[in-house]
Image (tube, rainbow, N blue to C red; front, side):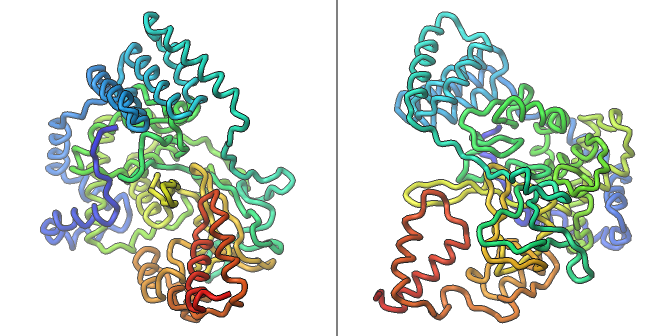
Length: 530
């Protein structure tokens, strides 16, 4: 994984490109608007022989960044040693992982694992330390240095065994007796219904109490997209799990995994193809932007998936993804023009470097259609995954993007009756209000009535999702929490705030934060009396 690359948001990147290609768009506008399908839009550029020749020439001139280098691995490891000696364990851990990602020979790989085990031991991560020691020996760790490693293994084993209790984060699992017979990842309290107004949507099939779990869903695909306040060297590219001793792809330094199982699954399904173009993408686009790689990943997953005609709604099947709305005609033509041109450039790169169409019995036209369609789907259906940190107080940073088919069936409300959180990339949906049988289950796509006024929320819905929210908060034009009148028995407010503050062993859901904020305002309005 290269250093210092900036990850741009969708809007930032596209706005830059719109400015860059505006003169060209104005020239092509009338002809481009005649293209009515994604494949035709792609072919608008791909049938231009001069354009294709120019892009191919540019690809041939690209000197891809180095993916594996023992020299670079040794440099990074030595920098890690300096940080370790200065007792900067976290910085040393990061540098050792970077060294591992660049390491080419077994010798350099074993040194990186061996040194990282020392950093992990110093941070009290004894289980991870033991795993890295075993990996170092597996890659032929030098016998002349092995005594120190054996001693560390002995110390780590004792330290790990002496712990009275090791806390393991465990995601809620739906009991077998409560599994939904029609929806793979749901509890037997919801069902999918369809009508003219809402299309497909989620409805309670029985009364649901506050706190009940509705679904435990895994994404069809994820894309690690760590921002500068997060650390991409601590997360798995396949499942987004937080992991302090990730293992690298043997062919590139971009992909890191939490286990050999995740590494093998990713390589088999898509990474053996995307690995070949990763060193070229940034140079070709002129910017660090992973959105196309996520679209490519979904396309590759769709192509490699075995056919499954089971009637159950499955979150791990492409059929459900293929039914999601992509709003292909919702974007302004100029924006669509830019997206398509850059996608066509990536398509040419794929043909030049992967030769994928020789392996699969798939028509190029279908690939073009899907590649652009998946970008459109992601724009309106992707979920941003956050990681929680605590440094005095809780804060979040972006870990990556995920695509869940079931999540997309929940309609939005600014005052939702469910909320979701994630562990790694596993999403758990719970009720935060009582839901009666037959009532629709709503989730928030981002805006809450407590944070933004109605005008701001409605503008966002129209821009991103092309719909008008008709939830109770919008119909009654509820004010933001900051301006809400307090209608709470004053003798309880101080006690509730105290309890909410005490119960922070885990990061609080957003609706709890809003509740606490509202109570604090109410308490202030009442002059802090009880």
